[in-house]
Length: 433
Image (cartoon, rainbow, N blue to C red):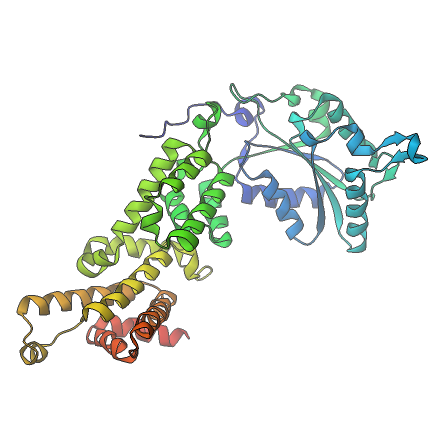
């Protein structure tokens, strides 16, 4: 099962002649627009789920603006402006939207911020509602309520496509004159930057990092199927975290769970689910504890590339890397082997003769220890620290159940100091504390 390549035309580029920007770049552009031409309304065009709402939320996070979002598809003129009700003994009954507008305006003024009114899904709204909104923009009045003079307006629309039916409101030349129009697109590299900060599941980050074209499944969108997009990848992350941390406990079990498969299929479609879970399952096998300890040379270059790409001076948080899962799984595996199978990481010739250890078992133990030392050496100091912190916690859980001491098991890991790589990584950790 494979994903078909997207062959659709690009509405923003082909029809409007507008270059597209990723969400991060778009957020910066909108900030500049609101500073340079605050009275010029702006309109974002982009596919559903691409991040238009998230972009506007970034504006509020800048601290300069207070954001009021109105989803026009849910409103009509009555809910927007109130309606006459003689039985109430007043000219107009104030409804939810009107209250929201007045509260938002008061808050913006009191906090010394500018009010931004964000009209979402404009081309899904009723025709008369669009005209009503344009009147608000032109007059800066909401019925009988006068908006702050420095209020700015943002509208968002989806592009019309063959199988995505929305009105092509940009065919109206008067509308194009009224708005500055900007186009946004799904951008894998910008999503990765966002995903790291938002602590999206490492499997999602790794998948998009290696399969950038899968950030948005335009073919599934146009075919009326569940489709992958930035918003749905966020949902995939939540599903993976919940099953891993709450219900199942291990990523390898999550990748094989039928409920996970069904939930992901309903979120990103059948073909994308297959590719994603195959990738996640391969990640658990490729970087499995046994593979690290027995065959590290086969994956060493990949580990180093991951470290170089995900651990920079500006961004060195362990939980943002897909290796966080590897470290957690490896430490649990080592703790179990130490307690239940007396695992060794180094056996000297003297120890071999003294304890009647076979040559084969000695070589196996030393290869295991050498590979673990090399892995820890290749990882950043944060990873080194996290491995032993996790190991101690796992040992505490295992040994408390048996009424045994953690110390004798940690002494076995001290044998790693027989390897130069381990000593180097330990010194690196100590010098960075």
